Length: 249
Image 1 (cartoon, one colour):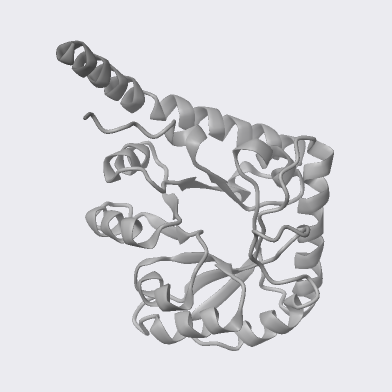
Image 2 (cartoon, rainbow, N blue to C red):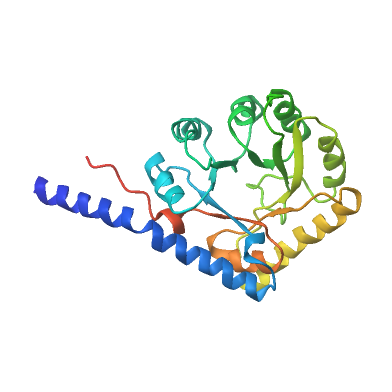
């Protein structure tokens, strides 16, 4: 009956809103355990909550629990949420983690703090031109393509040094490091192999650019392997928010 389905929906709503604290604590403890294993301080790892498709209320619930960094993939959806949550204190830090087309750079330059997916000079140049001189520099990671997956974007390791030099010369951007979405592996050693490759690329890049300090790598399924190989930004979505609720019909 309609009232039964309404009751089910309201129960689902209640359970989903009472879970963020438990989910966030579970992810934080997983990060802390991996940090101990890696002999790293756990505060050297930032958790980016991937909030794509989630409503602003779900983001606010996590923010109330102390989560500050949020990652968005879809621009139009993100801008409304960023604007509706703009008055929070402490302010939230917004990471653009989706693929970026050159015709979409302006709103990213205007609204985000970080961009993880810069993989060609034209994108970086537009972001630099469109970033307000009154705003802090846009923090950027260069996306590197590890493995040979046609569906994944990124600069090849061979092309990375030239792109890095070109982007580093642009004003209003600050290159922080590298990002990758490596091939999915179930085995931790196989996962670590890809992350070690990105870490080694960063070590090489730091010979010329010693200020690079960021490795954006690792998600729910492989965050331990990523932290063991030096990740500083972990991107976690469903494990924090749960499956997205269907709207009541």
